[in-house]
Length: 399
Image (cartoon, rainbow, N blue to C red; front, side):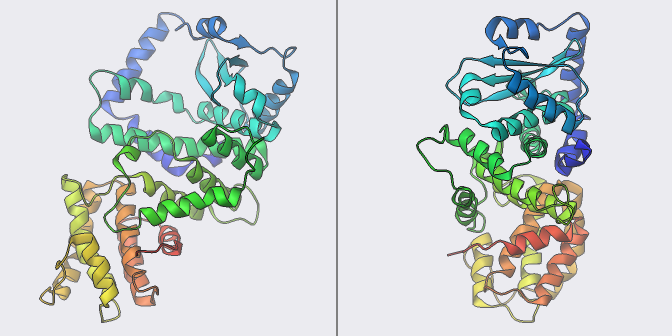
């Protein structure tokens, strides 16, 4: 398996977009100029503040590293370091003088078993392999002046998908889905596993409960989620479960398109809602949802009370009335779709399609006519049909 095939599609695409952003290029040029003047002192700081684990000191850790390096096709000398900390953590530092550095906290090395450590090791190597250091997110988010809200959102959205890519590299190294999930459980909880019994199904149930909490139309993810650089651990476990059932992990698995669509459904749980936005993009998406939701509800020639109730949860009480010209709204769909395509990202368009699926599920049944309307709109928005299938499959209670 070529490790590049494991990389998330959204990680790849958003990364390419970010590399063309003027502010990102400016920071990278500044870093390149400093590196041209001599080493940045990364290795010097590591030697001063942590312990380099030689092969003689930790042969077992180097054996794991050798296995991961071979599986992922890493071709750069790698040094391993440990630093004192009660918090489970690890990091991959941008190469310097042709060497890559991976750091582990002391508590992580002592509490994680072999498959858990291989996942962490592969995850960090994945960040290097996929060029994640090429987007200096720390400089951009914490520098002066601060980035615009639009760029900050784009950076954090990309970062979450970058973590998905790195997780897949880690899973490929570990070859143990339970060990991988257990690793994420330990990272999320801070527990070593000695006191609390790990249960993967109950851990992933947190995602279902998040979906139920966010199911109220117009709710969207809380604002504090928007600027998080890492997906929540339960989301990562669910995303890795999708990976385990894909052709990337087994020959007879689901297609890569199905995998990516499923991951994108999960990631919308951390995106801001366009229903409250004041931008032209948000306004265009609301206008599209208004017309499309009514077209979906009326697909079989009759709008039910439950569908009206869901529609009014999106747009407010008494937003639906008998005087609405449904035929005219349906005719306007093409223009509204074109406006959304011109002003929004793929991730934002996916939210509109996801919300249309919520309308279709209002009366706990989805008829062929409704599905045809949604699939047609998704196709015009250049959203894959697999995304519609995944969004429709969500079992979410609206009351």
